[in-house]
Image 1 (cartoon, rainbow, N blue to C red):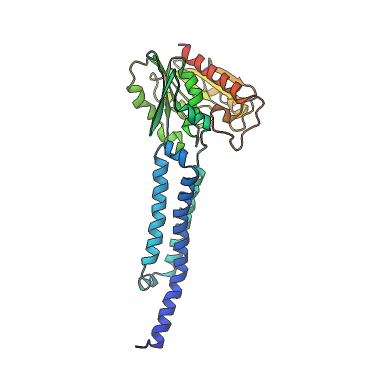
Image 2 (image 1 turned 60 degrees about the vertical axis):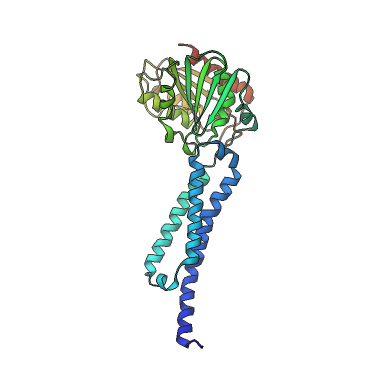
Length: 326
């Protein structure tokens, strides 16, 4: 059986119309599948130890890629050929824009992983017990019943485990510590997370909320929104977004690094008007932003002139002083 010339020409035309769209869908699908897969492989250990939201988002993005690739193979050419050209163009532009926003955000959200030493600290010690859960970490002294507590919000995109070594030192002073694991390591996505934990521990009669960098902003917002629930606020290289200057019921400690390139000394000075007049300020000479956790170096940070160990000793001491002053 032979094919009529006009049928052959029509078939070739349909195939030619399909090829540009096929290439576009394949590229888009490959990006949606490949980018999340690479991100997961690069940060697997950190992602699996953190809040599951980020892994779920990567899996969902990869699934979109699979759907696009499968759809491309199953599309019928005659049905697609009826689509108006301007609609195809608009659809492609929207597809590219959405892909850039979503995949770009996933790339930007790559976490700063905890150092091997911080990961080891998750095992606890003879005097401190560390309990890990999908949405939080709890650090508690192994002896006695703590009556003081600290709820802590990590810095943006920082692996929460990075704070366990320093907060274990705090806990050794008889403090129950709750470390939030916010979705995507962004504290504003878990602003009310400490509430349930505070309610579960009525034996703790004095609570302090604290945080590093963006986590400190979230902690300050929590203190503003829940007057009377927390008595202290520990700001690590951070400052509040809204004024707490009239809060005479709130004890505040502001600990900062003099070589911090992200929360600079000028930022700390400018925020004084937002805090109570009796706030305790501790400038750690030579310390940088990344010294407030154990996650390595951070882009945009300053150059330290003091050792990490010495800086962290001072940060812990200032925090313990706030917790034990009441």
